[in-house]
Image (cartoon, rainbow, N blue to C red; front, side, top):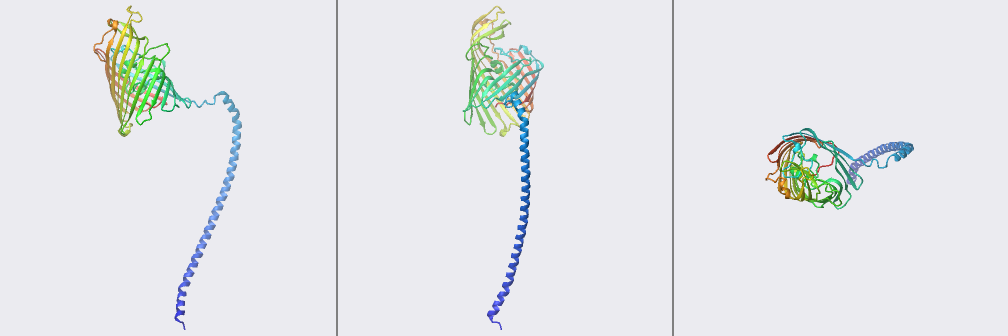
Length: 467
């Protein structure tokens, strides 16, 4: 007979044995899975080791083949390299200048003869007349530029005139390794006085130069000499520059003497206003000492008299430019307002009938104070399309001819002026097509109505345009 204790033990054993049996089955299953995984990974590792050994063997063969090939090529090239070294310098491919060409042409419809172009009260100043009537090419350019080495940059630009003559427009070097924001330039270059002067004609917003540039600088002033610019390390753009040169170009004159012929100095400053506006302003000075500066002027009797001026010429320029582009995106639409004011003082000796053709040769004192200005605005109303307007005006001021007053006309208070409208299409940075309509009133009682149809084509690399 079972006692209560015996019964309790029997009941406990009846619950424990099935649990132990279940745990043993689980352990056996886990061991079987581990064994299977181990066999699988061992097989995969063996396969990978076999592939690695085969790859290493192939790589060794390829490396040996490459070494043999290199040795063979070296033997073949050894003689040709010696021949090439004797035939050409080692740096033959190091100097590879950028080459560019700018092609221009125009159709001009003029109501007055361009051969009689003159500006009342102002000394004739070189090739400032508009193009001949009808079809013609305009001054084109051929340029070469490159970094000569790690310290010098060189630029050479030839001007190809419509009469088939060739002139060196610019030929200068720039030292690029000078620290402290200094940029020295030497050679022949367009002066950086004013705003428009150092920009080449093909990037102007209008076909021709404003009247003050024609009257005071003969279109543009360039010099053979040295230029030094310094840009201040400030958030606001500040540029200070000075130049000295030979003074051979108008309003100077050819000279064969030692020393400095022209001195120029300028300061430019500018910056951004928000994201949409930017500006630049500047003051410039140009001083020269012309010697026998020759020109022809119609005298009070209607004769073409040759005159010669020797003395001093001082010119001051104030310029301002404001640009607007919505949110800084000038690709879609933009607007530019640009203007400059010129003031010049000259004094010295003026020789009337310098060549003696009229038999009235006479030298007397001469003095003048003259001014002029222009203002233009250009609006790009959609990509590639622009329209603009410009107004130019000159003030002959006060002229003193001394004893030559009897031969030369006194001024009657007439102010030369001009109105221009421009419309152009620029399909890319390499081409532009322009129509310009303007009315010139440069002589008393004479109005010249002018229409210009112009094309500008740029071939090859060309430097970025200035602000």
